[in-house]
Image (cartoon, rainbow, N blue to C red; front, top):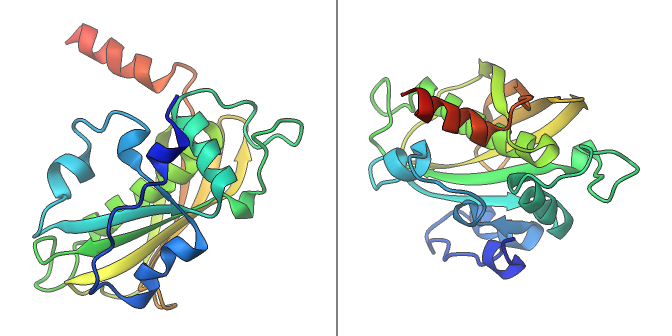
Length: 210
């Protein structure tokens, strides 16, 4: 199992980042996604993380209990999702993931405006992390997004996602893309489903068929 020290070691936040970004460590616990699971081939780490795309991103959860729950979830050793009778129980509103993204200038649709597909990717990524922490590894079944205003580049944005409700293997996630100071660019509602066959087995079966 991953040691606690491995998932709370916060890399340096750029000194020129907005104050709300630099304040995130004081209101939550940093989560290093690279320590939770194999990121080989991951769209953020392998494709989008560069100076012209997503320059930086920092994951936070509300408290240590949430971080430890996420660790158990990613390792596939959760007890019953959010059940009051188990130690993994948490209040839905408390199970929130917050990610600060530093966006470059090479992720646009219209010149100078972030592509809507990138906004969707960020919401899917962060909503998925919240869903994982609730039910363990799962898939996106549906993601509905309301685009409220253009997001200009370059920019720092805060993407937040929390559990709305869960029903067995299904979990509903509410997400927002904000400027960190209350201005909302997009909001979403997503349905994520934990498969009957573990996600890892899905991947192994696909490789075998190939």
